[in-house]
Amino acid sequence: MGWFTTSKPDVSREDRKKCWESRDVYFTCLDRAGVLEAGKEGNACAKEKSQYEASCAKSWASLSNLLRATF
Image: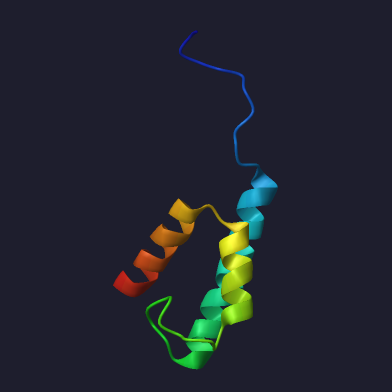
């Protein structure tokens, strides 16, 4: 095995785009609900949160949520 591989990445450009779009929809809903910290909105954005979690890797969602609360 060499330093450089030609294998296909686990996540495609389309997967990342879908994740970012669903994140933006979820965060917009949180903004409308007046919630800064993701996960503290109760049932207000349940549909958007479900789509976000289904579209993004758990590590990506966790990082995005942390960055939203931090900045």
